[in-house]
Length: 627
Image 1 (cartoon, one colour):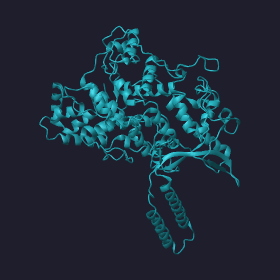
Image 2 (cartoon, one colour; image 1 turned 180 degrees about the horizontal axis):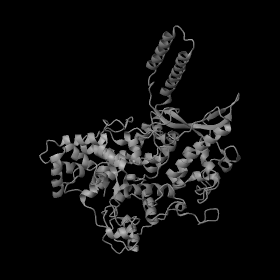
Image 3 (tube, one colour; image 1 turned 90 degrees about the vertical axis):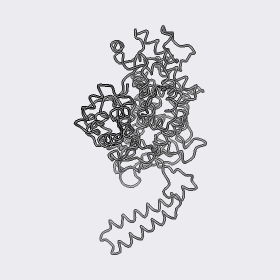
Image 4 (cartoon, one colour; image 1 turned 135 degrees about the horizontal axis):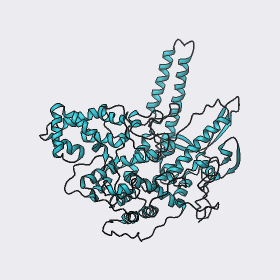
């Protein structure tokens, strides 16, 4: 199979290979489902054996942290993995946990640069992602709504909150006193960022590498890049109303009047010499503003961070020096090919279309001719690139459950990325994911019920043969991310709020007990607690997080005000228990203490307070890590 330029088509671009058969294995008693046949087949080829099944307490913690990001309830003798999976997938906490994984990819932020328009409604996109996952929205719908919900039949203004994937894109400062040649470069850089986020998130491809020349390793041409970039050159980031035009138009007119009056007030305050009746003038204008707000129904209508159809052209000002941004509303724009990525040296116009490696049923790449082409781009992504589109998201889900992907470069499936360790398994899962309605819940169940996922994490023999665990002959021990750690501290202390959704809170306010996903994210000034604990840069697409262990993290757990206050709350909540040691172990670790732990704890409490001992447990490896 050739890639159109004389080379062999990379594996990721090929059709899915799915058969009813599974690979042969010697140990026929171990596999529980199809996943296990593929995994065991490779294990046996490498001389590896599966590890034993983990115990109930370990599986309960692994399941709970994996699906909802919280510690489990007490584990009883009747614990059932299948029943627990169903319970956790049905919990609203599931959407909160998995939405954060998606927000890493979407470079989500609550606050951006002060010179930009407000992002006060950004949280509505975050809540939409939570709700969509809790509703098990099929993945193609999930994607289409984020790219083009406003262009889809059957959707309304209230659905515009889904456009945050585009509406919260990084935007760069444009000093319009500068000449157009400079501003064109800034605008082209924004387009590149959006093409890059689109390509890596949905296709696992580094499309932005083709801005200056044909991709050096993958079958992506510069024409492909500008064909897709034209879509993003045809949209304008803009707040969108969440109510119909009938309600929005009066609000829009009233807000424009209020803005004009605000400008009058600012001008008056700057006026020199100040008018004698300055205060009375300002008072009258302020009263006019209040009257407009009160007389306009829905004046405070919620707004969504989204985009509107508008082709952008960078032009010199008609009079004087400087630059003008000319947005032609409702129109699409085909970009010229920019030589070596320079927007001031252009070649032929490239019509908007999909990537040439993914022809439509006609045999040619799908052309985009309706408005910006966002909806057509989403449809081409789902229909024409279905094999790669499905492989990428299945690999992301697998990675979150196992700590490593079948493809270890989740946002680069090209030749420069790492080849899959189990390509047949990836194709099998992707094909069955499609056949099962693109259901994330189905995919979670298939992975979590496998014997592969339920192995213990301890296997000394396997560690010497396969130290990186590329062949999954054991489970990988995982460190909690900061969201799960903070939420778990609150949960075991009994203070965690169960409030779902809503505006963000300040993570520096340690009296706040909502889940960390609702903490405010500032793109230009990331919270220090998040920085210390490997939270990704919210200005960039982040396919995987680093997992570090540092002295600062330990100091946060031992001396930080959050852990101190919650340790006191935990100790106080158990103050009336006759078996304090047993109860605190069951609360924190979901198990009882052994004899040595009881003895050590008893000696510790002779010289220290219960709150201090609670702090020790909350900072322990057993609390920080999941086997």
